[in-house]
Image (cartoon, rainbow over all chains, first blue to last red; front, side, top):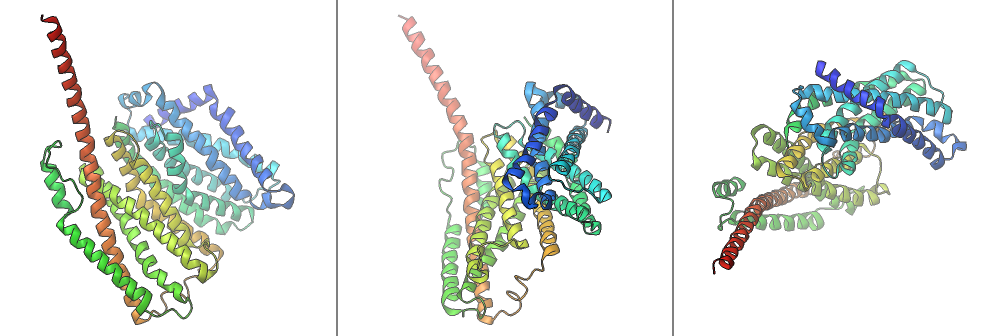
Length: 221
Length: 269
């Protein structure tokens, strides 16, 4: 756990100093929101109705960028070997990466929530369910994304490979978070909680898989 | 049969000249003939002898291929996960190749399932595609398999590629289960599963049931035949890769030796 905090601290410090996520990923996410408005006529009320889906698609796409970034910082200058030589527990490295990605995703999601509230005039409500959904969905995306991120890391085709691997896997999270948001915004929170449970199972499964699988993946050449 | 050829070639040095040069053997030839006979029998029962369905008409005949294909696509996925797990656990190259071969064939069978399903859906439902739980999860299954194959076919170092592909293969069946479950919830929360409620399982006539059974036998034989050949091909490819490197090294060495000989030849007189 100590190792995890170390790695997470390192990644977040990197982000604080380089501001790549803040200066590039966040504007991209807002751009996606604007693009949806161009694609779906804003006057027909479609945007407000489709907010849960559009919101989570925007999160997934910009989250992919954040994940790519999280492994790009390890690719340069033989950092991968440094991590292996550092004596840190691989499970700790994995959890640290997940933690750092989660923090960045959460920041992104809060900004995007403000974005849909302002741009799509969506009335936000059902806060307990909304917050719970954001938390478990973020954990799921970060846990699966970090595991598949290290599978794609260091390969010449990583930019194109990661979306192909990750997006089908994250389909349950997209379905679940969208339905839960719909339930929260539609004022029927009881319909949303089973989805939060499903996403919770997803997140736990992937954290376990990541803790077990990260060591062998990191050890290879 | 697969174990036989595998253990045979494993015993030999990789550069041996008497390595198998084809993926066929007497056993697979018998299997291939049986497969052809079974497919001919399926055509006979499926297209000629069995009656048209009261509701679905002649379109029901597509199902004699569709349902077995879907079943064996799942068998292939299961083999991929099993092979990946055993590769990670025992470092067995054999199981790694089983995983790879069955993933490729599972992808093929999933594509066949989707294609035949769409052809069946058009006359029966009036559309090629509906967002039914089964259709959606089968499409996701195909994408998950393509992801595995994309990693397995990377032009990377074999050990790196195998290990990464094995992690993805290991997660394949859990992913399929989760995706299926979520898609099922997703659809059933919105609409009742009406599509299969009055269709398939309720009343299957004797001859139609037999045609479906023949379909399972024929597709099962085809699956096995393809799997054995694909596995042997992968094995030979692996041998060729290793052999190719050895040959290249030997060639470079010979070149260097020749150059040295030429140099000394010039200097001597």
